[in-house]
Image (cartoon, rainbow, N blue to C red; front, side, top):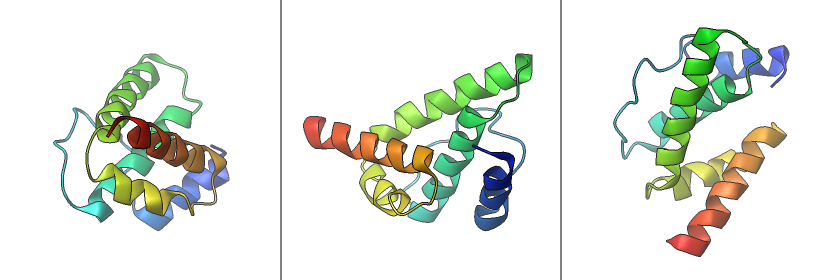
Amino acid sequence: LTFCYKLYFVQKYKIMQQPFQELPPPTENVDEELRRVLQALVVIYSTQNNQHGDWNRKLADRYLVRFQSTPIAWMVCDQLLSDPSPQVRFFAAQTLHNKSQCD
């Protein structure tokens, strides 16, 4: 994601600059999961290249993989499809495609 779009994410969804320190437990709250998914995608697409960046990227990836198997992913990804970011829309479409094949 570009810096401007990352800043848009941070402002629009009140995303913390610091990513997860550990994986949060899944919730049934669509707004909370939407915020977490967007936060994880910002980390995945960030250009931070250091030891902490790699750790955070691995943690964000683990969160997103786990999220994709939850029932709430249907509702969250439905909302993500209208996001202006092509990366976010791709993640949502990929998740919904996989869920339609496996759920």
